[in-house]
Amino acid sequence: MKLKDELKTKGFQNEYQEAYLNVLFTASWLKSTAQRRFKPYDLSHEQYNVLRILRGSHPQCMQVKDITGRMVDRSSNTTRIIDKLVAKGWAIRKINPDNRREMQVSLTREGLDLLEVLDQEMENMPKMALTPEEARTLSLLLDKVRDSEY
Image 1 (cartoon, rainbow, N blue to C red):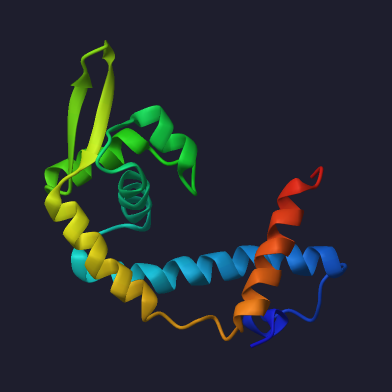
Image 2 (image 1 turned 90 degrees about the horizontal axis):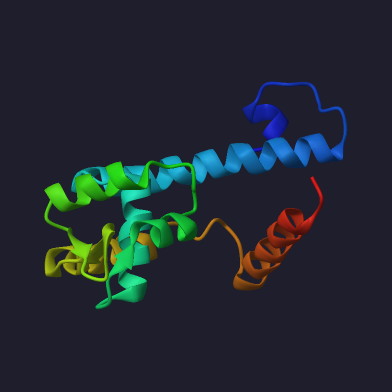
């Protein structure tokens, strides 16, 4: 459906405004679609992001600041997210023996197992009605947007 129909508007000031609103609207739509997949696991989008980051360094531990630096939404409260993952048994947290002010976080076996299930869930998500080449082009265009002086 066209964005103007989704937003029930007659039009936009210019192509840039339409593109800007379309990116925001589509990001929200994609996040909601993924969130429906996560709901049966009592998992938020942000928690999923942290689990994936931790898997990337597994079996090594990560510092909280490094996790935050890799998050999609860097304004998220990383410590609170990690607290929830630890409470659910998907991650463990320990004090860095080299610097007692730093916490190190790693995945548990349960966290790895959950990610394997979620990998299947994400694989079964609709492919956004894009060909692989269109998806690559979209990613390149979005990278270009972030490289601009906004």
